[in-house]
Length: 199
Image (cartoon, rainbow, N blue to C red; front, side):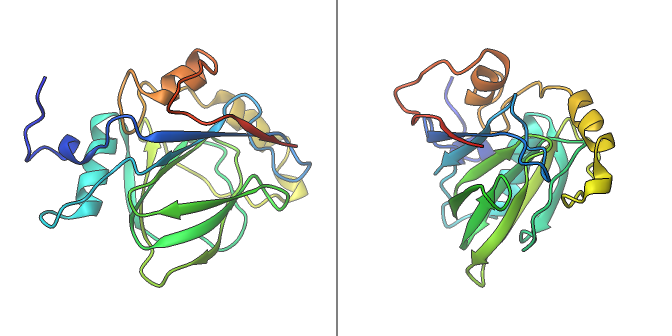
């Protein structure tokens, strides 16, 4: 079916490269050994007309990722134990550390999307002055803030384990990469890179 040029879906890049990143519990940050982080490189392209933040927010919302915010990303390690989070970069760029202090650095560029399962630590290491991000949560769930403190466990882990799987991929809907990787395992796709694992 053709997509009307005025639809926010017209800004979605078909078959964007997806990098799959898996993390295990590092003792302070639980991460999420069951569900990988998904980094969609260049998932959105923005024209001169329209507001990129509105476009990303609407696409996320179409796929039931809601409770949106527009801002930067915190410069300290943190995670959410009650919700899965999608981040869309609509301006500038940043180097993020994902998975805690021993995790992986991710270059987050305009048009990228990062999907973070509940429990996965993330931090803004450095960013351009014009970094602007849209965040939303699967199913519109409320999110909390956890910082890797010893007294957060085991209650945080119990909450992570209760977070339901999303109904849809935040960018591509019910047939998107998230569904394959989170519900059906890591079915290999030629447009996707090899999974990188960190303990």
